[in-house]
Image (tube, rainbow, N blue to C red; front, side):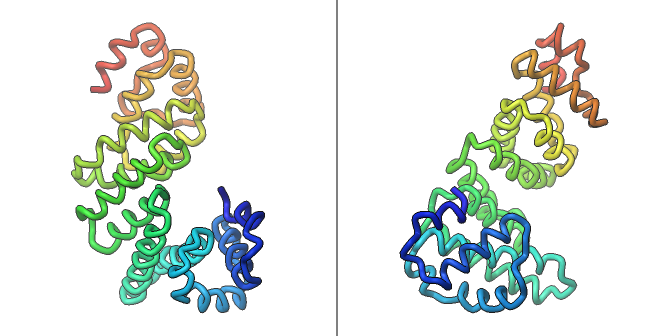
Length: 242
């Protein structure tokens, strides 16, 4: 459910709270609210009452601003600003998760923030696992998790491989080639074996179409099975992916 949809039944929200939720919705859609509104909202999102009330729509709205600041800080030259913004984002995520324990997106963002601060710690890996556990078969979440999980896997963190493999299977089973291609392009090349295995195991007509459209997009994985091999020798294609 989007933040704008929540407004439909959040009649008891105050005017300033409604402004906060609408502005957060704009941020999530890639539209930055005007600076005066951002300045005013900065004061509102720091109000402890937002977390104390444990109103999911308000906590998520506040979180959108914290994460936007953290994203901006990651592009900063000043390490002090980055550290402060990431610490603030971590605190906001923890607060949000006390209210919305089953928010897979929040768990993923916590994993990313933790990794940005301290590297692939046990806390980052566990947050990634909880993101998958709370939203295991949602393709849009799989698309978001795969590049991060692949980044950890490429660094030798084998504990993330079960999550990575399941998310790749979920994405392949949608049969939608555009997100598959976009995800591959955002991920380290070490993710390719997971995609080859999932593509080889999927239903033949879907498999052939995915391979054909990937080639049309000039995306050819190192040892991906050819269309002919995939169509006529599925067993051999599966062996090549191991």
